[in-house]
Length: 467
Image 1: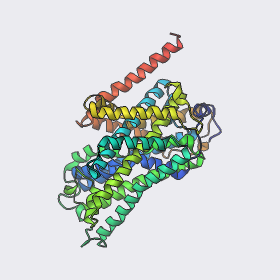
Image 2: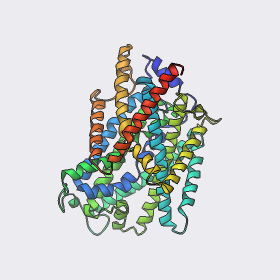
Image 3: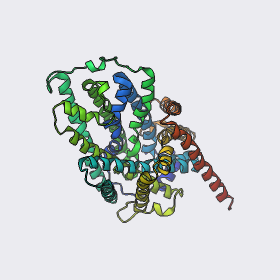
């Protein structure tokens, strides 16, 4: 960590002490991958391919990769200097103002916590397909208990189990790439498929530019969760070494996993055949002659959903714990048990997840719709704040006599990187306004975030005045 200026950094670190530093680089990296690779690749890629065509799909996912790349480097500089679990909530509190920290802290916690029930429900649907006679609620309850137990253990044990969970997804992708390359070259199947599907039947952009633009948002959101690994910053064995390695490995691991998989998928699967109701991965396995392809992919997607839920539980628990330390949430959630696990924050997060599951069943068109809508723009909001916090951090760092060369992990091409991140996020906001499926997130999200901010500001003001 930089030796100068250090007071602000020490203030943030002091409020974020108490967790066990025992997670290793590969475990932190797989936490990010586990929270990111999921239905956006295994299922959502079929929708993007059918809508945007071969070239449009690659452009859409490359657009998402660029945003993820910029975000990770903006976050990376802040994270290595200030390795704390709250990340953007802690940075916004100290670098912008407490009300912004309060707002983004609760938005982040809500967005992560509401993702948990969607993964649980998705897992139960997959199990229902495999075991049609078993009630879905039994699977939801069973998976909830399993995930609670996995998150109630010390961070070193959690890191090991999370690594195994996430590795299964990577193994599927590697097998998929090997089979796909075999089909492209003719080593698997009756004949070499080559790359003709890139140009056949309408060419690279069969549905035009508009289809590409509209699918860019779907592809960009597929990378959501890449920053989830940052929650482990307070539990990293050696933050200065582990975090930069994890950042680079996560960025390139995700880009290679997504883009390489899509190149193979597009080559093997004609864009009109991308099945919106199923996994295009399963279709490719079937083409390769694997009879139990659908079952294999179902099991992997199940593992993927549970792995994502596991990562989001971990991160949302640490976010809530951090807010407790900054007096932005009830103080009891900042307590840790004898194993240095934030158990109270975990219990609150899991109770909320269970309540959200119930609301998705009994009130899908009201309560659950509102919750899922207000978090629809959360990633964009958080990414913008990473960039803003980096600008402020650099400005304050220089004003207090800091030497930029002492920063351990410098954002490349600063200030272009954070400025470009903000610009691309604004483009996403504009795109959402013209997308009927995304517009509700803007209509409900922006006023809700404003209410968080105004409410916190008024509360802090009244507290200062002794009201």
